[in-house]
Length: 253
Image (cartoon, rainbow, N blue to C red; front, side):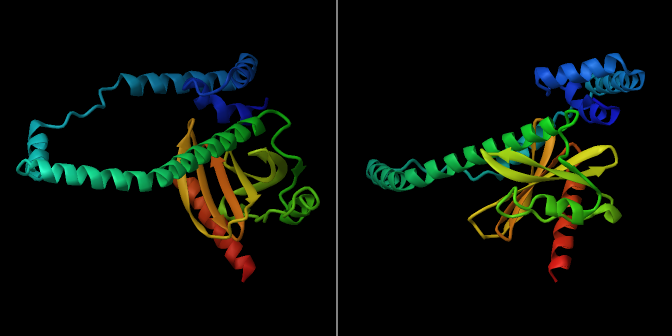
């Protein structure tokens, strides 16, 4: 493990977010690297200082009174007939909506599973020798490498001039399917952009979520699903996706 790779995982180690294998690799590196050991001590001291500070704020009683006053007042108790009529109508609506509710729950569970796999693949890539299959800052070298390995070669955009350095690509697996992973670097932070073909050609606006300490920015466009994952701040990851999408539109034009 290199210092750059260890630096990425130090915060996750402090927060107990690494599995046993990754934690052991980072600890082995720290045992033999004075610079990373010093960085870890500094981060831990910072965490203790933040945890020990009295940063909680208790809302005043006046706020509770204002909220309660703004709530609608209770209505008169309904009679027995209206209760039974409402119950019957509610039961019918519930029966009709049940299948839709189940579909929504299953869809959300599926999205959570995919996000978990994305973050796991990102963590695997940070192990020594796993980050790239093709190492190049030239998009015209990285993009052709995917030909023949995937049904559709993912778009590869060089964003170095915009603050996100292209460093290569690799083949990865998400949801038991091969996907393209385009790798960028932002200062010392790695950004994995996973790209997979989808049968759904609808455009889905970007959304950001946090999972196990990592930010994941996902969107769909042109028959492709995109997931960008990194430990950089959410606003920086949003900036990355916006510049990637902007560059895509420019190249298409």
